Length: 130
Image 1: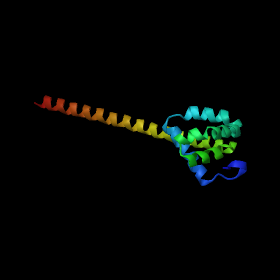
Image 2: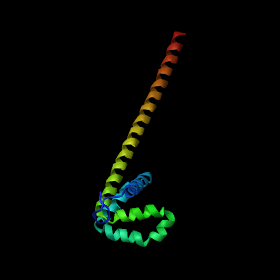
Image 3: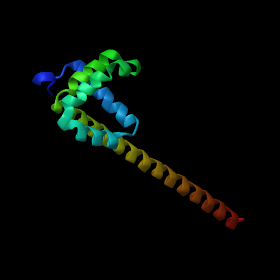
Image 4: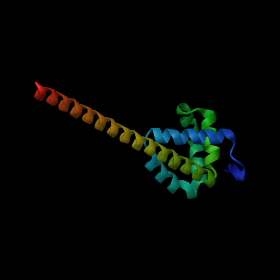
């Protein structure tokens, strides 16, 4: 990964990008974020300049140091691509975890139904014996 002017991303910039990607996934906004970032990628430098312009307002909401690191990272198109890849990767992991949880819940429901059925059969067999 490269930062401004082809410099490598700093650890702080990587951490901020990771944090942004995780928040996007937590908000279930992967698709709109990917769409916005893909459309912005050719204009990444202009976009980062816009982020600088709104900086005083954004820093009220976000950590100022992290915001500055994010702005510097987004000046380079490669870093926008890195953010996209992190969002896609985390989204895939979240979908896999959700799919596994649904599968496990389905298995639990099936086990409960089978246990109820076995209990009814035992009760029926006990009634027939009497």
